[in-house]
Amino acid sequence: MSDDAPYQMPPTDTSRFSLVLWAQFGFFAMMLFEFSQNTDAMDSENVVFFGAVLVTGLLQLLRVNNRRMIGMLLMVVGATISWGVIGGEMEMVIWGLIFFIIPFFGMAIFVPALGFDEHGMELPRARRKVLLVVVMTFCMLFFVMGENLGLATTDDGTYELEEMDGDVIYEVSDLNVNLAKASIGLAVLGILIFLAIALGGMDLAGLRPWHGIAIATTAAWIDGYNQSDFGSTPLVMACLWALMITVMFVLTACEFFEKGEEATMEGE
Image (cartoon, rainbow, N blue to C red; front, side, top):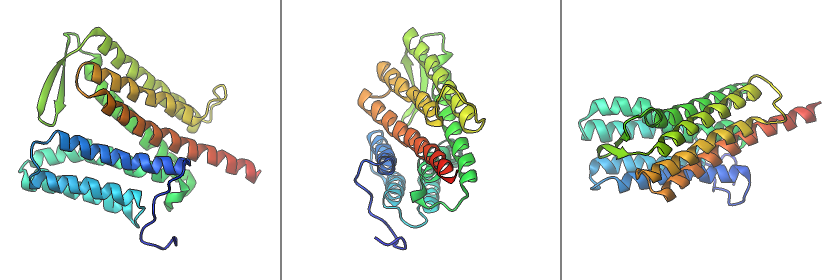
């Protein structure tokens, strides 16, 4: 299909680009599934938001022209109409846009685009590198720290978690608390290694930037087991989430930094 075509069919091979593209779509599909499972009725409020999620995911999978800007606009407008105009909760809209829609969906939309030349992002490689490092660092720390700080610091055997149908209090064990602490430690360690190599240019026993990301994403797998253990999320769903995040982050970092090193060696 021509590069000027309004869309492109997704690849079906096992290249890094193909795996990340499908993992990106899997992220949107799982988000849609989880929302539908936690919603009692398909009223107009939910239909609008579900539609925004589905269309945004398809735009990225089919690589429609201007898909990133259109996708982010759809998510912002969809959340505003669903939660604010129809639901009448403008306070929820503001909170949701700042802490959920923009960072969470922005991560899924822009991380692959920053790492793969196939997405055709018109930015110099040096600027893409800075943006990729900032976005990956922010997302790993924001989501891992945000999800685990409360659990890691609990001392009364209970953990209150905000869910779609209200706050739920879970009974947790010392194992759950210690796993949350380990998760935070691995995420921080991985990000420090990533930053030291990617931005600091340090030589850490032959490690590459994506090795740091791989260490950091192990936190998602620990979180998945932890949440299934105290009953927050089914283990299968937790593992699927961890898989999507791992594929998107690790393979994107591998592609960008390994390809950059190969280009530098060829230039020499």
